[in-house]
Length: 297
Image (cartoon, rainbow, N blue to C red; front, side):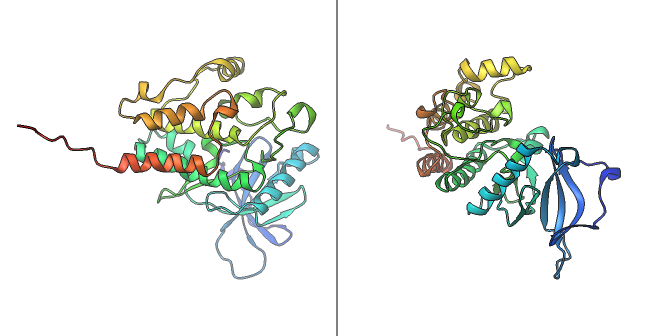
């Protein structure tokens, strides 16, 4: 989502969406806009909420309305400190969320800021905790990417934008049901580029693995430029080992990232407590002092 909006396109805080007063625009994507918001009655002086709605030219698009409905359902059912909740919605028209303060991970990466290895693993562990709760609630995020991750000044990670969330269907391939596969191509797992396989929670594991790879190495997993080349790489090109690119990466983290990026979803760790514990174990390993060598005379 582009958060830089020309002043000429910002709206004055006069429009009311039911119980919500809408303020200046925060950002926009291809199909949606996000505005600052606050309750229209009460003593809220700050714009502490965000209202997401469909762009006017797409208001009649049924699929976008269905996507907004899924976002409202998922955001109301999931309770996690690392997943933005939905606190109000109008069916297929808008959703309201608490405003999350901080920088998106894409902004941090674009600025070329150096991310310590321990911070990278900590960030991934927080996101894994959020995804674990999401999957326990019966949902897949479907669009885990740097644009949808906000880091606060203290390093707290929050996953936003549930617009591609979908119910978990363990035994149904996408050829036999409605399945949203319009996430960001560089972060989509191989199975989401095919309609013959079911989309499992491990799809989010792959996307999180791509992000962790980028945080560790400072480079994209696949740097191809065309859609066809990226799809081919996602389907068949093996991901390089992070330890080959960053020598001080411990072997445990190298193996974990390789498992998260496995082409076969069943070979990836499930995004549940086991993945959270594996990332936490690496955090502890990175914090532990190196063993001292004993000198023997």
